[in-house]
Image (cartoon, rainbow, N blue to C red; front, side, top):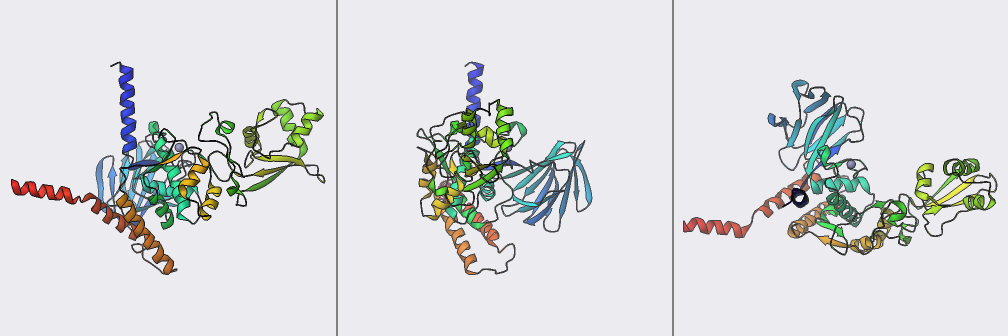
Length: 445
Ligand SMILES: [Zn+2]
């Protein structure tokens, strides 16, 4: 076999393996900030501290303890409750079971909490590289919480399917940086662990579900806040025309938070922009008229040959879906726009409206992604998912029946949820047929 072909085969096998084993994910936290000091404390459960790969502190890290981590030219400085441990290439906080929550306080940045493990090294001599190693579905629930608002579990289910599809397609986006994703909009926002049971429920209901095209291949799943009543073709915003990213009429996005906007711009600034930046002769009556009365009853891609995406960027507009008029009193240019975001793919506010109307999650996904279908991964245990969904629904109902009831950390929904998850994990591991076979073998021998 030729070396190039062999390398490609190896790469394909590696990628397939990584996608199949997407149970844990590495996410860079605070990726949009330069963190020069981090204080980690412990909200739930116990942690071990490792320096490089050796155990430094065993199960002693729990409530009341604080680990201080700082960058230095020789590595990460580590101190626990003020006691200095030294400087290491890498410091790792490893959870001792599934019910563990870390509270992270970086200097000058708002506090956040996360589940799972934390691996801290130096990005450079003044900045920490902070990576959360966490269950993929736990990460997804955090993404869903950061990416969409609402109060019905199907809203979260849809966002989870979109975010899962995106993550599995882009699994190696930060491979060369040593992690899978950043926590910023460059990848998907992951601004905290999921703290809401209804979001966890929606995410779990969608376990193993992704969006595929007619050939069964996972699709790109762009989304935006509000389409303004019509989504955009992918080629009108980006380069390629994708068959599943077609413009569709979307009246579900009307009368929502981000449905409409206006922006007033002095007429000289508006015309001057086209004249200076795009060398257009705005003295010409016909051109001037087009610039002052441009209208979009349906979405257009360009104005006088200039992409509307460029105008949107230059004037910081909420969308490209706007019409132009002149205020008869002030003489200013008024842009009357619809929607918020690039307009391609799924409209989040349209989704919220459709869910409230009782439309099924798969119909909503097919409305926004033309010709797409939902794929269910057979490896995900439906028995596990169904049991989990039943239990968490019970927890939500109980909490609704007792509003304002004060609870300890172990008794709130997350503590209960952790115990449910642990029990189901153990049940899944226990395979009665296998146990019986082993027993029989022992008897025979
Ligand atoms: Zn990223």
